[in-house]
Structures are given as structure tokens and as C-alpha cells.
Image (tube, rainbow, N blue to C red; front, top):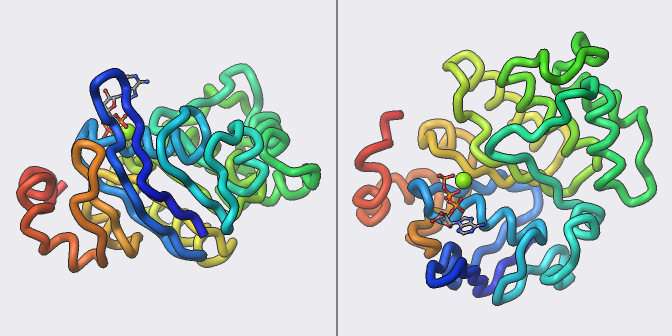
Length: 237
Ligand SMILES: Nc1ncnc2c1ncn2[C@@H]1O[C@H](COP(=O)(O)OP(=O)(O)OP(=O)(O)O)[C@@H](O)[C@H]1O
Ligand SMILES: [Mg+2]
């Protein structure tokens, strides 16, 4: 469904993404792990067309390299950001509608936005200004706005960061439900290995922009290179 072929992104001398290839299949929850600065968020910026890069990305067999962000969104690729990006002066409902309008291909309707507000448990807050939401609420809102575009793929960037144990359970349930009930392919960048291995299969582990390994949760957590570079200090978090 989504295929990256030898993609490279350099910032000056630094190759933030370095000759990376991978393939995400329809209906997977595809995990991405790696230490700070590994190039995970940059990878999302390449897929969604924020930066030019070397190599090629195909979506449903179509070359999307070089397309502008709104065109990529309209093909069905939607994302959330590591740090919640919300319009503080708007209500929850207005924000979800704006998200939907940006990414939909003419078929946007507020009815579907309403469904996504309910799906993300934001119904009671729909008329509230978004700055009243707590962190979990803001993360739900970003997801609702991304879902309002009716995407084929949703890409989430460290959705658990900053959440407490209870909230992590809720967010985990929401992501499972997006995949299983809405039948949307999910790509998830996540630092918490316990959460990632519960949700995702396969998982791609990168370091310094390069692939260390790709495999099932069992495979990656027993890979000596992964343990050395990454799991050694964060497996229990
Ligand atoms: N716009 C930019 N200009 C210059 N360097 C950048 C830019 N964006 C990212 N980088 C650098 O590229 C590398 C990868 O950054 P990226 O944000 O993709 O890492 P990450 O894996 O998402 O890390 P984290 O787990 O901390 O979120 C880092 O060294 C970062 O400083
Ligand atoms: Mg990041």
C-alpha cells in the first residue's frame, strides 16, 4: 500500500533518513521505533511531502514523490504531530471540520466529522475551545481532525508521550479501534516499546536514519543490534 524505495533526506551534512526502504501493507499497524534523533519524524515529513528527498515513495502503486502536502492528504494519507498542533481559538468542532476540509477530496461532510468527534470521545467537548482540552484531549482532537479527511492511512507520531498509564490504555484502545473498526491502516512511531509491541506488527527499527531491522515484535525485541542500540535503556519504560 505504501512503499518507500531507497529514500534519503539530508540536512546539510547530516543524513536524517539514510537510504531507507520499507513497505506497509493494507490494514497493518506498522510500527516505527528508534532512539531520539533517529529520523522517525523526518520520515513522516517525507511521506507527507513537507520536504523534497532522494528516492521514491509509492502509495497504492502511484509515485507520490514531489507531490504537495494537500495532494498527498487528498490521496488518503493523514497524520498527527509529535507536539499537538491545534488552533487554540477554535472550538473542537471547528477544528475537526478544518482538518477534514484540508485533506478531503471534495467528499468532505460535517456528518463524518461528527462521527469522528464521537469516535474519539470528544462529544461532550465539541463546543469548547480547544485550549480547554487536557493533553489526552488535544491528542484525541488531532486524531479526530486527521480521521475527518477519511484517510486510508493514519500516521501517528509518539501518541503516548506525556500520558499517564490510564491515558496510555485509552490511547492504545483508540488506535486499535481505528485499525479494526474503521479499517484504516495505521503507522505508529512510539518510544514506549511495551505499547509498540502490543499494537504493531511489523516494526521497523531505525538508528541514524538507517534500518537496523524489521520484524515481528518478538523478532525485534530479541535482535542483538536492537537491544544494543535501543532497548538496553528503554525496554522497561
Ligand atoms: N528541519 C530540520 N533541519 C535540520 N535538521 C533537522 C531538521 N529536522 C530534523 N533534523 C535533524 O534530523 C535528525 C532526525 O530528527 P527527527 O526529528 O526525525 O528524529 P526522531 O527520530 O523523530 O527523534 P525523537 O524521538 O526525538 O522525536 C535529528 O538529528 C534532527 O536534529
Ligand atoms: Mg520525532
